[in-house]
Amino acid sequence: MPSQQLPASVRKAVCALYVATALAAVSVAVIVGVEATDNNLAEHLREAYPQRAADEIEMAESSILTYLFTLAALGACLFVAMAWGSRRGRRWVRGAGGAAVLLGTALAAYNFSQPHPLAMTVAGLVPCAAGLTAVALLWTRESSSYFGSARTTSAAARGADAH
Image 1: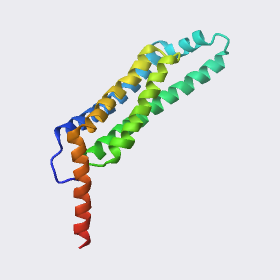
Image 2 (image 1 turned 120 degrees about the vertical axis):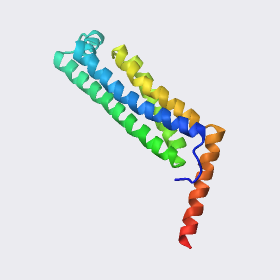
Image 3 (image 1 turned 45 degrees about the vertical axis):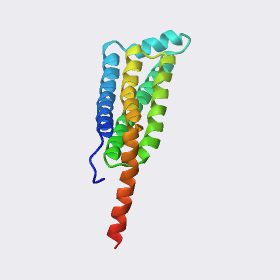
Image 4 (image 1 turned 30 degrees about the vertical axis):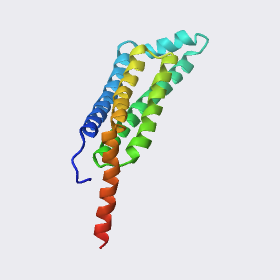
């Protein structure tokens, strides 16, 4: 862990990442709630694909729910890993983490073109907004100097341990 204090932008980014993690959990609850109350996804699929048999609709519904739950779980894990890495000044957070958040956001936005209930789609996009906020905070000038000096501090500490 870097010996210096976290800059305000990094602290805010870490907070946004934990908020995104919580929102990913909320998105799962929304999906379960929508399905439990009126099986809305199957109805949307029947409307979009009236020629499909009932078993095909059930299989599509199961696949879509698995896809949505997997995205939420992967997103939550990514947000926690990014928060951990940010607090420790890991440089990969800004590049690889940022790319992963952008990919997740693109997938969430793509879901608007699919026959999913609106509540499910919006619930999947909300954690991405918090993740994008965190990424923007991690790319501020203040954050950039922190990640640069964290690497220098870590390298100096390793060099001191070697002697």
